[in-house]
Length: 148
Image: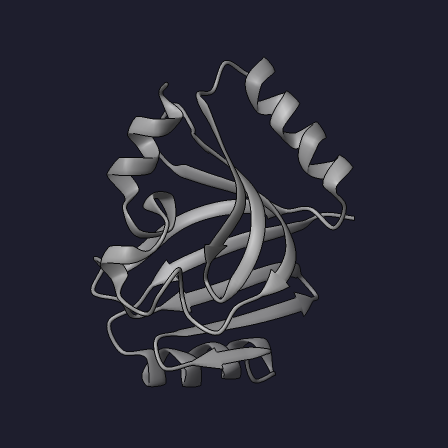
């Protein structure tokens, strides 16, 4: 079963955690100095926020696959839709190790489809925003890569 993913860039992580914890009626499943994530069942969503110097607002949307075959099917549908697709195997981003497919919809909204298969101790390859994966860190890099 798949899960919708929403990632929002926020100005103040603590203030946003208080707001979303009240809204969702639960504390985050993951909480780091610059990141928090709720794995909700009602609605079934992976909702993440981060305070990493990005413009506040929706950073990207996505679909989290529970099995590699689900990710492959999503990737095939994105290719059939004519969306540029960039595959990223064993990506290290958002305190997780995942296989990902990035694309951009006709309005320029970034979509991240992924299957997570491990955890890491930092946001990306290391703790600095400059060294995280291109799509995880840079919306323009993902848009340019997806257009390839």
